[in-house]
Image (cartoon, rainbow, N blue to C red):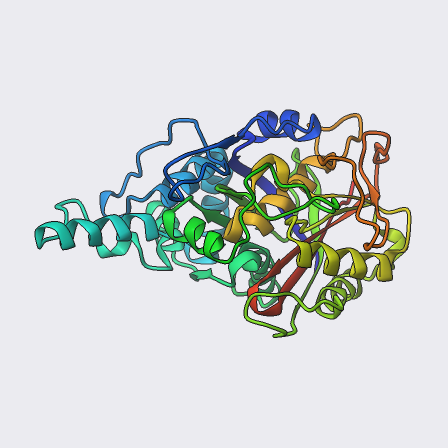
Length: 397
């Protein structure tokens, strides 16, 4: 069944809202990636932080920066959310989100306060940090009665959230689902990746011979998914989704790219499409030596030469649990009224290809989408433990 993505709210290092993010995305604007002290001792790596003031969460016991980011995205599409609730009933509207941080930052600060003084801060609530907090917050704020849960599979979390949201529609459990992902910057993730020697001191450089690691960012991207398109809105749908779990290693990807190849093939089969039907691929493209080698091999095996590809992570950082939904949102923007010229997200790098990798067709501004459908775009997300997701978005006008 086709699942329509009828509304989109998003916030990330590129900006706040569809218009601002689209303008900077298609311009290849990396100004949101800033060297920042205070996250990792004695280091100032580039970080994709949201710099805009964030709204106060209306439920104080669920206050966290993670929920503030999610609330900022939700407020952008609140009229569409309220309309869906009125149309279908609160018990027929679900919430499926992906995250990896939830309220870890608030939990860590509270523990530090406890260790220093023997008691927790007065404004600390355990509900701030539970993994389900983002879904709990949206369901409580909107007074929803449908299923509400969080998926946490590291960097595929919100890609899997979109896949799971469509299943709720397919099964008839829901008539509308709020789905997407959110992750906020916190010391645990930045220092964890630093301990893995995966953080670059420079802006990340995907597929380059000089790539040396990731940048971390924060973001929220929230879709309203239904079975039918809005009468006057965008007619953009989740056409297909595929997932695999090769379990090759706890943190390193399978160097053969078998799991990545499997999930891309499943997404195509699910959509009833062939590789030649895809017009653009948003790469996972983290700029680590192993991920880029694996992904380029899998993409070359399935698509061969000629498919326009790019990694958007030099503009946003790797937003971890939010990455799958955020990069699906970039595909959505590519198909939307915000992109009348058919631009594609450019691949920002130093232009130095790695001779050990298959040569992909990286977006340099010369490639364009057709200005009318059918247009079909794929987005990849790969995670620790060999967890893989591919999504296919397309317009149906």
